[in-house]
Image (tube, rainbow, N blue to C red; front, side, top):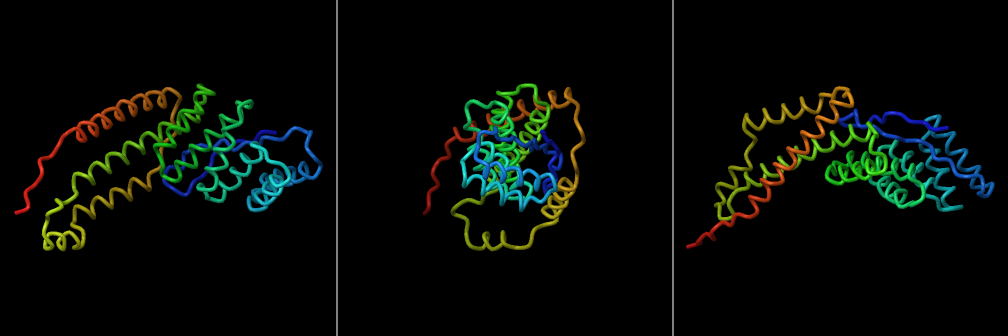
Length: 240
């Protein structure tokens, strides 16, 4: 049985799609390990993710398996612990002879990194999944979302760098910067809250393809601006 569902993350990007499917182990394993995996899968179906995690861990103690690590990662992600899930998904991607497992592991690794706001590596993970299954629409949609967030993150970092005060600024200026934020700052915070409250709309395959192409072009523009900025040299200031 393969179970697939949309994952609801505790952040504004609730559209992010998970492919949390069970990958059952072949019947050549010991009975104890098989029983533990069966109990873990049953608990997962009942959404008792704590119990599922417990039994997956016990099964791993009996026998190490990328399939079990993948399923354990899914149970942990359902408990909103992406840091732990990342390592398990990374291990699952190393299984060379199971392309289905590798594709799903890369996809869910992208989801975990997305939740950690590590958008750069999230994009890379989704691209690895698409190398294995190029027509996976869910992965394409998630890649679009991750690239949009990465562009925003890079633009915010660039703005912060541009707003950094000169190193020789006096203490009075530094104290002024510590004063309560202006109305413009408050307006920016309100806009950010509005953006966080908004939920993305469903996309068709064609819309996802067009948006992906657009974000790739924008990504190239941002990267070029960053390279141009780094190539400029600023004359040293004289401290008389």
